[in-house]
Length: 335
Ligand SMILES: [Zn+2]
Image (cartoon, rainbow, N blue to C red; front, side, top):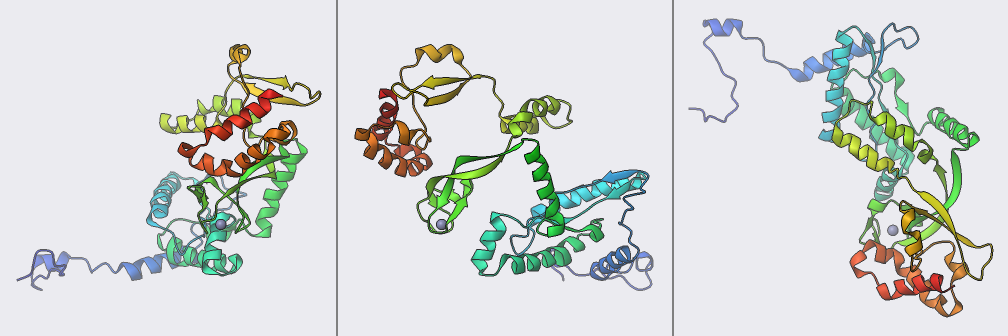
């Protein structure tokens, strides 16, 4: 007798009615491969983008080929979005569902370093696996004839073109800002790659460095972004996340003169201008560019020591050394 959890194919006497109506066993491997090939041959999901009468753009986030394969969370979002695309196609829309690979960035670089393989070779290998063994097998209606690679010069010439337009319109600027720097790997690290003040890759103490970087002036659009958020049919939770990310606050900027140093001044932003006249001291960030200029010779060594340790202290706030912090505070205040 069979145990209940054994996966045995039920059998019926050949002469029974049930045996006659039972469909053949579903051989999904053969069945799905057959239809996937037919869809490709008949170009079923290729859309005439120039002449489509009811165009519908069903875009999903492109995966980062920075690992051996996609995980089930990727499929969860792709399959759901594909169901939407199929629904729209059944409504008579010309659904364009592209797919591509976003391979630039720190994750691909890290994976290449870890495996000791050139990122171009490794990325091509990962993309092939993502496409052939994973994305094509889930049966989404992707138009593979328009596959995109962000690392392809034919693609990124357009991102460069967009950057040039932003620059020409005064929306891209170069300025100095602090970054996390690993002196061993000689690279900039994202905040999430700094674990307890140490480099995620090699464990070296991370330094804070001021480097020249490009910035896009997204803040110029903060107000329209916030205003237009109201028109979107998004959940209140997502809208709140967006508002916090845009991070707009209303306030004013003012300038403070530094005693004994004509022409040198400090720019301050505040949301509470009514409190300005109650100020008793000024605190500067440890790596503020004015610090080398305004620090007293007597305090210079202490301030430098503090600057060297500031990043570690920031990463581990409970160990903050308030004694040194006060030196910085008075170094700027005493002038
Ligand atoms: Zn490192």
